[in-house]
Amino acid sequence: MRAEPGRPRVRAGSVAATALAAALALTGCSGADPADVAVTPTATGFGGQAPVDGSRNGIETVDGPTALRDVLRAVRSRSVVATGTVTELVPDPAAGNGTAAREGSGDTVPGRTIRFAYRGVPDDSSLRLTVGDVTLDARRRGDEVWVRGNRAFAERTGLDDATTGRVCVAAGSSALRTFAPFTTPEDLLQALLGADADVTLHPGAVTGSGKAARAQVVVASGSSPVGSLEVSAVGQPLPYSLRAADGTGTVSLSFSSWGADLGLADPDDVVDDC
Image 1 (cartoon, rainbow, N blue to C red):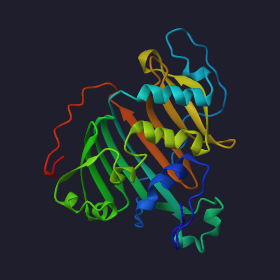
Image 2: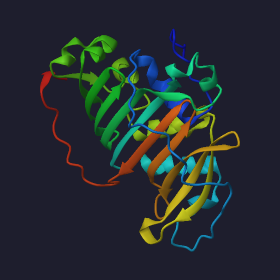
Image 3: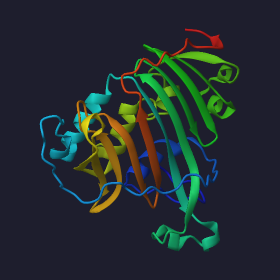
Image 4: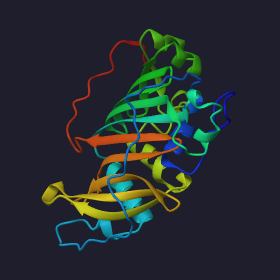
């Protein structure tokens, strides 16, 4: 991603930077949000393999790539409610020229924030997404998506009527590809934790018991833990949260209602149907 004038370049090599690089190019708007704070990983240490007692799925005993593959496979066709934020950290203007902040002194403040709320399965879902000054509300059924958004969205996509109601577009249209990988939970997890993210995963400790047992998968950049992916240690290894933070930004994702009937409504306020 090309750095904007007067803005720091988002460096590669972290889960936060991967998400930011995927979407912050959409907007030049900056808005500090003091509610978005750094997250401390809940799991520490690598390689802590707990015994499998027969009731668990063994996700804590496999290597990182295998764990991610199994998680993505579990996510693929199940309904879910997924919400989250990705917040950019920028040098604190009060810290002089920002050099100390860029070197990791901690003199940073929240910058632009991506917020999303997703419900459903990939071919029957609703998505609300805010990227800086751009807002999107999408309702997908099969290969068709009814979208609406604000003026900034219309300017980015050329869908002028989307400011007055929903406009139908193809699921593979450039208007929606612009917002990848935030259009499905599987794509988002793959982008944040997959091979292109330059982070490593280290399945470790299991907490809780019975159906509430959770495995903590440490997310690391180099030798340093930067976050934790919490997945079910029983049945399918479905994710429940992802928390990560470093000098480039913070990521906070939550997943719930796996497999539930979410009762999505028909597209409303349609001004340009399929």
